[in-house]
Image (tube, rainbow over all chains, first blue to last red; front, side, top):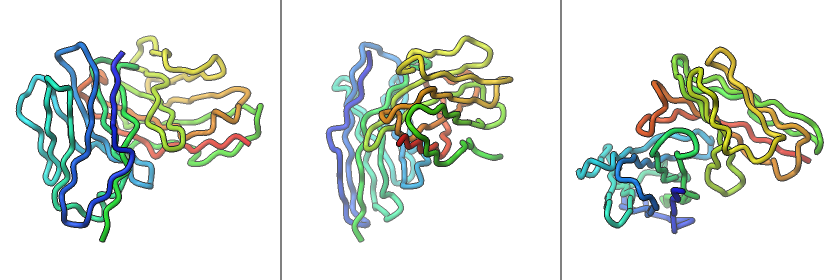
Length: 114
Length: 116
């Protein structure tokens, strides 16, 4: 079974600085998708960024970018120019197939300090 | 259009009672997921619906949990004889097309269930 690990339960960053959240996963598959979701205190989960495993180029969405290392099964999220609104729980997720094969990590709580 | 909605937002119940949680997915989305999020934890898959296919129930923790999806739209998650360990936030998500691995899941705000 696939597993997703986020080794940093909590992180903090100064406003306008850069922070990197770590994620590793375990799979024997070669074709899959990886995601970062954000969950603010409102509980609404929002997709931040998505990476297709067959693409070598790292995905980027404005201030958010990933460092996808397929061989190392690592998928870290970099947030540049951190803003107060970035404070939230961040979940790394793996998608290979339907249903139970979509797996979330335990999350990293990010605090942004003014 | 409107996003995924869930009701109630909060539910407090007594141990042993039955509860029903409702999810209204985004119109036209064929795939629907239910997850459970215990305090400070990640998301635990419960059940997945895709169109008219038989649902993937492999994540349901016990036979006290059941879910249905009527007309390929609204879904109801039912927990019978609730226990204190059922206390959690229950999240629903829908996605377009086949709900394949690359599809974005659009989440509702969740229902916080507290079992006293």
